[in-house]
Amino acid sequence: MSDQRFISADAAPRLTSHLRALSLIAPLQRAEDNKGMLHVSAKTAERVDMRYLALAAIELLIDRMGAGGTAGRAELIEYLADLARLQSRNLSDPDATALAEHVFDGLTNARDRRARFKVRLFDPDQPEGVFFEFALLRAEPLPDGTVGYPVQDALDSDEIMSPSATLSEIRDRLTKLCQALESQDRTGDAAAARWRKGWQYIRALPEIVEDARRTARSHLHGLVGLVLNHLFEAGFVAVDERQDGNHLYVATPRFRMMLAEHASVPLLDLARGASEARENAHA
Image 1: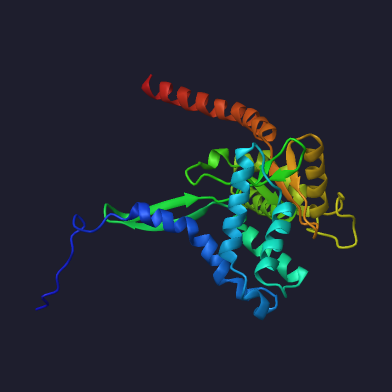
Image 2 (image 1 turned 30 degrees about the horizontal axis):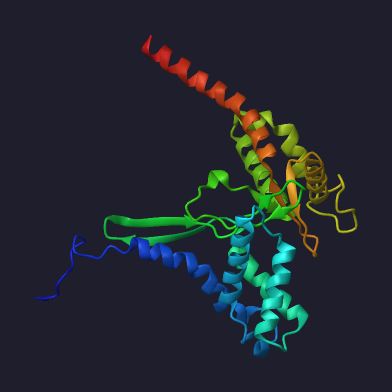
């Protein structure tokens, strides 16, 4: 018979707050751990502390926020590249930029399409654990149509974070939505039937035509580009321009308000329908 002793949940230490604090710095450490995967000179990059660059970016943005400002991606990349060269004098400009972009992508969680970080923490009082969601930097539309990156309070909720995506990500999400509507239409779904003309048109388009203009109606990629240009001109999205052309589009409060106004009508109809169904059931 085993004489192994078991610690009860009541006697286990409560460390959730400490785990939350450690989770906040995990993306900084990940940038340091993964720098060896970058296509840069290993010898010169080894001298660059990526955690220092990440903290420097946050410090700069906090200072800017104190004065009512922020900084864009291009400015942050240039600032971090300078700090990288300060740490390693023989670092080339392309390698310094690559390291800076790696840190920026880590802070914005680019690998998960800029979603909030989500970790599971052990808590003796919660058998399933505690899920902690947070963000470090978020894309925020600015009045001049550009995008800034203020530091994100880890306790902020998703409701105040502006949705953001690249053209390719929007195209892919639209494709998946139309595929889902096509499948639902086969089962007689009313919503899919209502929007059949739209999703059939999109499904018939080629995804991308390499020889065509970036914004053209002849392919889905170009059509999405045209729509985004119109949204930008109307002040519904801001644009964080990238040198490779894969710009980041961020929804403005004006756009989100418009969507809320359009969504409120069918939601009100649903609520009325549910209310009438309950009244008829009790009649």
